[in-house]
Length: 482
Image (tube, rainbow, N blue to C red):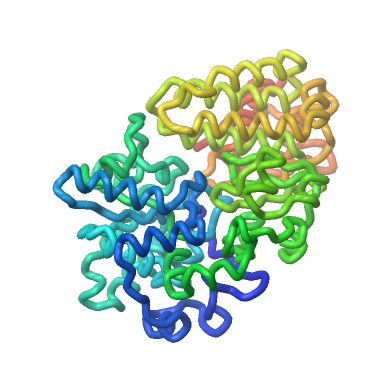
């Protein structure tokens, strides 16, 4: 599961968010103050000016200006008895993202500083941090305890580890004691969020950046990065390494720093992101302006290079299936549309012909703009981007020739805790070998052409192919066992 993955850390240039971690694996309260110093007070107007002066934007995916959020909450509060709340989104339901986890595990006080700073400026009484991992919860609770009475205002709540948990209304619903599922209503949390109060909701890195800027001041903060996009950003590279870099840094340089390369292409922004072809990945810089030229956004900061030795079509199919399984299950595009899209992609990869290619296009059109949240749109855009960057791969698979490469799982997904098993009935098996053609990532043949094992675990992403192998076995020698 993603809950046991602990990121490696690195940086380009002078670290800010990750400062001090070269000497200690986690900064407790004393270590935090030693590295960063005391937090200066910022009245409401001054905090808005600071956020505007550094063009601070949300680092959870949408990139919404933080100063506008502060103003919106303030306006709503004036019309509703003045009460407000502050929420920190510390949930990372996507296995390709670990940057917020890194902050909460290693420098939790930087995040708490930002949340407390915002709460003081808004006069908010409630500060709630929503998380999904047990180790992150423990780190945060320890940090709150280290603050003594000052930490009593902060509440830490653990929610289910799912992709949709981090959606704004989903997070608020969960923190309010309900199901952590999107509401489907177009209501801004700045108007009605936690407990019905105007709520400032932003992700972990945003609050940490605010705490850094409060100490440095706008001018010093702008000394790193681009003049138009100042500061540093956190990236998760390859689903395992968290790197802090100044904005404007070359994407190719960051990949090289992490021992990687553009390979067959790079997925930027995670599983609701966009694919960059190798040439684009080599020329792109890590900035909004540069990535927008390739119709891409940095999103939550996930950067996933695809190695040369894996099958792009197969990798996309397994992620599409996982995304369908992560549906909130509350609207037709999620309940029916995404599983249908995932099935169409799997049929295409399995040699479904031109009809399968057309089916994928049809399923994508059917879910776009119709979901109760952005999950159907994001998933269909992920598939559409892959079709645009790997057209020959998908065409070859659809027409039956394929690429000849195995699916290595280069795009990280949670491991199955209790996988189903493919079982061979040796009294029936005739060694036809069809099962290895349908399930090359599960079945291996021995020297005589029979399955090398009688019981083989089947990852959830491969269940449809396993069922197909069971149905198509000429000797009826296969079955699925839980």
